[in-house]
Amino acid sequence: MTTEETDLEQTIAGYWDQRSERFEQEQGVHGRRQKQAWLAFLSEVTGAERRRILDVGTGTGFLALLLAELGHDSKGLDLSRGMVAQAERNAATRGLTATFAVGDAERVLDEDGTYDLLVNRNVLWTLPHPEQAVADWQRLLKPGGRLVVVDGDWFDDRFVYRLKRLLGNLLIAVTRRKNPWSATRKLRQGYNDGFEQSLPLMRPGNRRTMPRLIQDAGFADVQVLSMREVNAAEKSQKRLAGRLINPCEFFAVLATKPV
Image 1 (cartoon, rainbow, N blue to C red):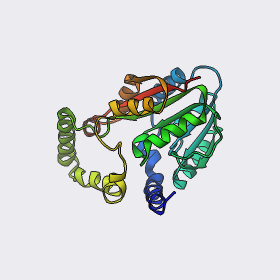
Image 2 (image 1 turned 30 degrees about the vertical axis):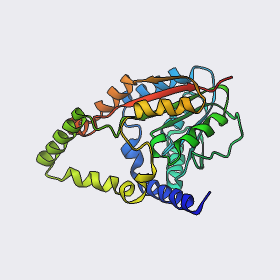
Image 3 (image 1 turned 120 degrees about the horizontal axis):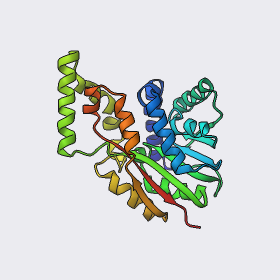
Image 4 (image 1 turned 45 degrees about the vertical axis):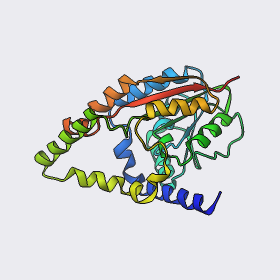
């Protein structure tokens, strides 16, 4: 790894460390409907048999802990020490058994063919070298193993999304007497000032780009799922303004390592 790459990795890790204390509140499990929707989705893509699963870029353990709850042998990996510490606290609080470790999603240290499944949520777009990561993920899977990438069209700028965001921000400005645009600028500052230019998937169109990237890495049976129940459950937790300023939706890319 070059000095420049090391500096970038440290910058990215530092950004997520700063967000780790509030990340569970922002992105965690907060309601029965939300939890049940995610459990149903994960049950569908993993199957009933107990499997060895790696959650790459686990954050505060969102997927890893749900998979542990379903009875799988679950490990979570994240570049941020703060995120890993929070994931371990969440596991203890919820009485779940899962392993967590600090590690790079682009260069996982585990041996070839270690896992039956590899999963992640909102991770691929955060990586400077996503093609390198996907190739490494295939290495980690057993022949016939499955990759499950959960992400969203977070950067799409279609007119209806822009209109909803404008209406949501205006509603917050009028009803709460606060500037919602300043909060958005603050959240994005770490990217804009630090490493946004180094993230090739921090762009519109990932519902099309990510499946192609995964297929190009040699995966087979690549398919895209819309995750309607998860999206409905996620939005049901938010007030009208929150639904308007967050109009984007999750999707999942499923693929198989050839035998």
